[in-house]
Image (cartoon, rainbow, N blue to C red):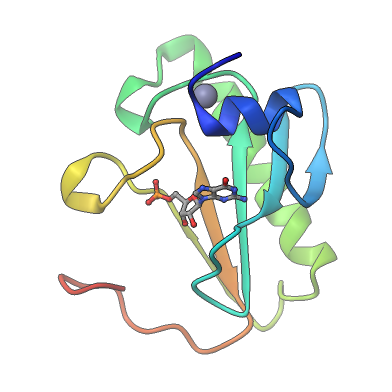
Length: 117
Ligand code: 5GP
Ligand code: ZN
């Protein structure tokens, strides 16, 4: 079993509430939501961070974005708006080193900045 928790979610050994799945991309609910709607969208392939994406993998990252657009529409927040965030590395607060995007919505979100938002 992988020691990466998001790989475990992909494998099904760690449960998650899935919002979307295909052979390359998975979207699921964040277990500790930081907004009324807080989904996570990941490539199924283990890529540690945005800094580790290779030239061949950019089409996969585009697919992750496409799924984010679709999930936002399905959750009914495409018009009200949403934030798509990737944390890369320590200063950004990345905790899970399997590349993921946060899709946050459902309320007016605080401005991005140097504090904890
Ligand atoms: P990061 O700080 O790495 O950008 O975000 C990691 C996110 O993963 C956090 O928002 C955290 O709530 C979420 N998370 C951590 N462990 C689990 C888990 O076991 N299941 C789910 N669904 N989300 C998790
Ligand atoms: Zn992984």
